[in-house]
Length: 227
Ligand SMILES: Nc1ncnc2c1ncn2[C@@H]1O[C@H](COP(=O)(O)OP(=O)(O)OP(=O)(O)O)[C@@H](O)[C@H]1O
Ligand SMILES: [Mg+2]
Image: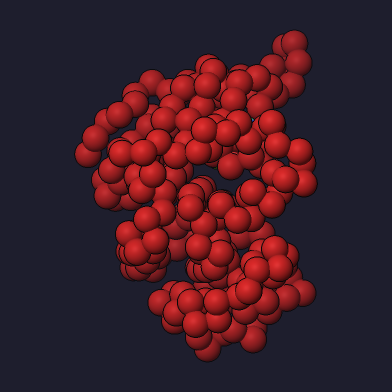
């Protein structure tokens, strides 16, 4: 399998002196194209920090994140932003929807920012699959938490990214909706050959991943655990 993502001695330190937190420590991981990896570990172990570094949303204190062999932190800020929009889909723990835009506008926002043509049929297909076809004109604050998370997932998929990073994507969903969302993410991954990296507390999600990476106190303690 072809490697798509790799970290080299990745470190992220917050605070100074007595308040120092080593959120990510000397992390070396490698993820293949098309792989589905679950990152697991206790609250505060550094899972979100690691995911944000992998997606170039946070700068490391030291070390590298290589995507297709290129250290993303060597890119200029503007180039990194474009790279993220084209290559990466992010699903956050909180939904981060724009409150003044309706559901449809939220979903196509990143694609529009990139002046890419919007594949309307594709976006409609996503909207139908996540069951929001009746809500496309709604503003986010008129939706339930689970519906808002589904919009955030649709937004992440709309640009057909190569890598999808998701931080507890089903954390706010009931188990039925959670299963549907996961099934959809898996389907999207298989259809488009996408790589999927999910931070999760959910044993069921960790089970369906190809591999889990266990983090403790910012360190990878178990790698390559194949399910
Ligand atoms: N912006 C920040 N400033 C200072 N410390 C931070 C910051 N962000 C995270 N941390 C600290 O870094 C450590 C790792 O946090 P992180 O959010 O990555 O954990 P997590 O594994 O995602 O936890 P959870 O499962 O609760 O979401 C924690 O000790 C946290 O307090
Ligand atoms: Mg977190």
